[in-house]
Structures are given as C-alpha cells and as structure tokens.
Length: 553
Image 1 (cartoon, rainbow, N blue to C red):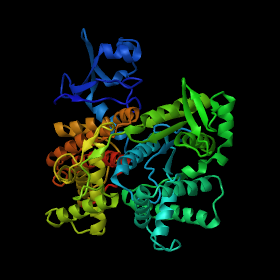
Image 2 (cartoon, helix red, strand yellow):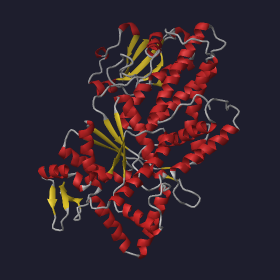
Image 3 (cartoon, one colour):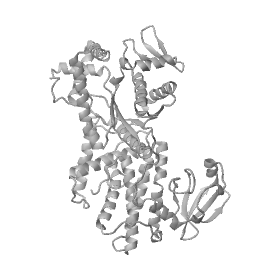
Image 4 (tube, helix red, strand yellow):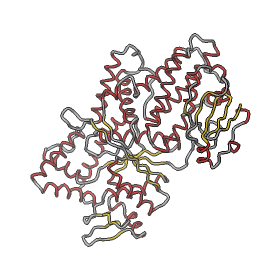
C-alpha cells in the first residue's frame, strides 16, 4: 500500500493524547500490520518528550516498534485498527466533540434594508453559515445573527425618492427593487440640489432622536419587513436560518446609555468643544457620538456586543466581514477587552469575488446568480444519461445542485484571498466541484437501494478488507475528525472541502473494485458497512459546508 498521510484523532484511537501533525500511515512489516511513522522532533514539540514509552497504546495492538535517529515507527495490528475505526461508528452518527454550556455567536450576511441582495454579500453569507455549522457540530450551541443596516441617512434618501416618484407608500406591492430605485433617484437629485442631503439627514436624525411622526416610523418598519420577507426567500434557497435578526437601530443613543456610562467609568470617554464625544484610546481619539447625538458604526457595534454577551451569556463573538473592515474590528476587539475581558471578539475576514457582473457591467443580484446556476444544472441534467426519475421536483434538484456548485466554488478558495469567479469551473460536472460531492453521495445511496436486501452488520470482520482501495478508504475515513479539528482551528473551509474531494476519490475508486452484488454474503455485508460509513462521513462534511446531500440527481 502506498503511504497515506493520516492524522489520528485523539478521540478515535489511543495512539497519542493530542493532535499529531506529520503522522504517516503506511505499509507495515507484513500484510497484517500498519506502520505509524512519527518524527521524534514532532513528539518533542507537541508533548515535551520523544520517549515512546510515555505514550499510551494498548500493548495488544502493537506488533513491533522500530526506533530510528529521526523518527519512530510503531507497527499496529491492521485488523484491530480497522475494527476500531469501523466498529466505533456502527449505528452511530457523528457526535458533538464537546457540549459547551456557553453558546458562540456568529454574525454574518448583514445586508442593508431597502437594497437588493448583491453577490457582494455572498461570501459573508456562505462562510458565516459554514462557521455556524462547524461550531454547532463541535460545540453544540451556536446563535446565528443577521445584523441588518437599517440606520443612517439612506432611509431619508429612500423616503424622499418615494415622495418624488409619487408612490403610494402604504402600497403592499412595494418591493426592495422599488425602494432601491427611490434611493437611487434621491441620490441623483442631491447632485443638483444640495438641500436633498440635508433633508435626508434631518429625517434620519428625527428618527434616531425619537422625534419622527407615527407615519414615518410605520413606513420605516414597513421597509424592514419588506426587506426581511424578500431576503428569507434567498436564505431558504441557501438552506440558512437565522436565530435572530438584529438591527443597527436598536443601538441609538437613547438605548445605549449604559454603554456610554461604562465607557466613561473606565476613563475612555472625552467630550469635545464641538459637542461630540470621543473615545480616547491608544493615543488616538475616535468619535463615538456626533455633535448632533447620532451614533456611529463603532458605537453600535460596542453596544451590540455587550448586549449579546449579556443576553446569550456568550463569551465568543464571531464577525464574518470582508478584509476592508480590519481596522474597525481590531479596534472593536481592543475596546471590548477593556470593558469586559471575558468577551472574545473574533474577526473572520475574507477576500472579494471578481468577475461577477452582468453584461452591462453592473453587479449581479444574488437571486440572479442562483437562477442562472439552477438553469444551467437543469440543462446539464436534461442531457445527462445518468439522470433518474425521482420523487423530487426537477427544479428543486437543479436548484440544490446549482447552490452546491456555488457554495463549493467559494469555499474551496482560501478565505482571505480574492478570487475570480468562473461559471465554467463552478458548474462543471467533472473535477473538484460541489456537483462531484453530490454525485458521489448519490452513488452511495443508489448502492444501498440496489442492495436493500443486504443487512448492515453489527460486527466488523476486518479480515474482509484486503484490497488496497478498501484500506485507503478506511484510512481516509479515520482522518475526518482531525480534519474538523484543523478546520476549526483555522476556520478555513477549504481544508474540509479538499478532504471531501479526497474522500470522494477514494469512494469512487473503491466502488469500481469492491463489488457488492456478486460477492459472498459476509463480504457483501462488510462492504455495505464500509460504504455506509463513507457516506455518513461525506454527508456530515457536506452538511457542515452548507450543502443539502441529494439522494439522486
């Protein structure tokens, strides 16, 4: 068997009591053992010792141990190894690693109200959902928050634009598109009429200070409702559900007096002659309240972080926002640590997508992107020889495939790097794509359906797995939990995505060699067990990434 890099998880074996990098699993001295090759410097680095006797491995599992100047090779009984990997998961799904009593909070997506959902919000939405799923799987408790921008002069511009358009502002047919058009109109008007800007600002100031009329407040709430209703259609297609919609407006001056008091108590606030209030921090002054008493992004983010900590009893706050906001979130992290050292602000930056524009050079709306992906997948399925008649609506399957393609095309990129979008690479059936993962999952489902008369056994017969492709697949399966650990440490989805591509390759190679239908009863049962375990691993990984595993396509 060729050497296969494989990190053995501390929870699934007794090889070591912590994560070991650079562990190699390969062919042992005989056909009946597996060699674990561990560099001595890695042992010293991770565990403070390079003496093998300090590590706990049941003696009955070791066949021989070989010491070399730079590494140690431990030979394990192959059959015990296989039995441990497969039997530990018979009849079980993957369980949470820990049940953390305190939830972690993930803020992501966060578009503005009364504006179309552009693909500019795609990465925050996809990456934020992945991180939420990962943290939920590992920690067991996550709060997903969508923090919407409903605060600022843009409300005034939208209102003035609607008045100019003579729209019926109580019309139930108002859409995000019509609200956005009104905003654009008012902005154009302000280029030739400077009073528009001051009127828009005045409308917002009245709203923030609580001086708006009931009609204006009702209209503002209607804008919010229209936005949520349309956004949830897109979120449903992406398989995303938020636990809370939070609003910038919740943190106006009248609602953050406790925060201002706390900042003043620790000596961070300073009043300026122009009537503004600044945060005196790290030898710089940052405006917290303008001289008209309106708040700023930082003010509201400080207040939001403190409320979430108090309301959810959470100590870990994750913000999935693009690279351009680095300065803002580093400042937020520093200020919050001064107020409450128990709160940990985690800024999760990401790069931007290039090449996503319409033929006119304008930004693409997210629903347009999803519709294009669905349409493309419908065409591919129409001319595919492997398309099956099924109980799901063809449009639903095409939509899930399109979404899978877009999600994986994004998550296989390094998070912090910009990348160029390509329809050809995102939607190709062959190659490393979301379509490949769905196809592999469907093949495994089909295998079990075709062989439904074969019962998944309760016991592992490790001697049945003699083929190289079988052992390769078992070794890849055993790496899953370590991959999740590494993914969680780096918060890089591409680590998990690339693992699932490797797992899929192992599965498809095994499917070509390990026949079930024409095998003896015991061999068939053991192979079904192996493929079931592979499918559970693949399915779990796909769900963490935000995909809906299909049963057929």
